[in-house]
Length: 296
Image (cartoon, rainbow, N blue to C red; front, side, top):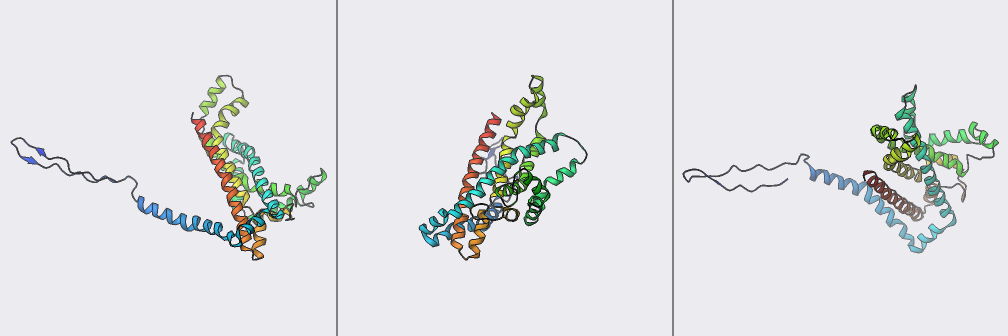
């Protein structure tokens, strides 16, 4: 919003001087910037910055040596490795699965498509504890899927494989919903042009579709990874929670809180925050690079 000074006067014939009409102030098409910015800053301060600041300050009550001992403890290191390793593996597994499901729901018409589309969102609405109980009932040694896996020598529940299954289950909708709208808006004329130039179906997907969907795929993987790292309810039932084997970092934080070791719990939380932030920064940089490459 800018103020304009008065224009120079107009000299009429005969020497009379008439002032020019003063121009009115120009108002922004979107008013209320100051109020909107204020509300945004207050929200970020109260909901995001202050809790993170408290998390960053609390571990140092036990000193640098105490924080180091907590994070280098064998049990803590194993829990962090399980949480981040399996979360990344599950998110990467959801990339091709989510692309396939989004492609099927977008490009094909078949009976029950709307029902299948609605089922994709089920992990969003399902309470995590309910999801954990359901997965455990299915993949336990006496469950229908767990018994079938046991026949070929696979232990699903109460193993890292069970954690992986739970993380794939809760992360899949993020990938599908990130890819689906981009795929719907994708110009099929480009695919048809590639086909007329002699490209096979595989070449069209590899050189036309995938590059256009690259940022959306990476965005979905980032969201699935972030959700999986902090997942608790759907994992603790199927994990078995054996220290050094199937114990996840969020559960270890809860255990330390129950032992009134608040600084130790905060130290683990701070480590998870730092690793998650670094991973998301790398993914965002890759996403920006893919978007620029797609526009080039």
